[in-house]
Length: 145
Image (tube, helix red, strand yellow):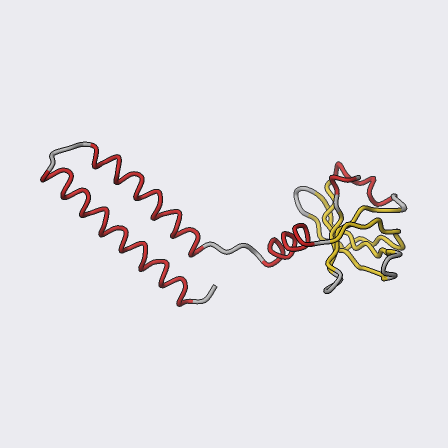
């Protein structure tokens, strides 16, 4: 995320803080009502959620995965090779799957984290995948195993 969009998100948040101050001032001083505190609560929720949307960005890998999952084409791939990458997390280990699909005839390389409870995936001959035909990026669709 670039600096200008972060600055504009912070500016919008500060403008909402001015609105909150005005609501508090008018509500407590002029109307002498505690309902202004409820209004301030909801305004603050809105302002903070907008600030989060402006400041927090998802990693590229999450965006890539979402794009493939939402816009991809389902296929059944034949496994040619499975290699360990050496990267290990708390949940599992990363593997590189070299797979091939018949229509269109193409060979794909998928790097996927396999959880400790899913180690049986390494021994499968075919895998359900979802891929983007234009970029040939693919993921393993584990819920279809």
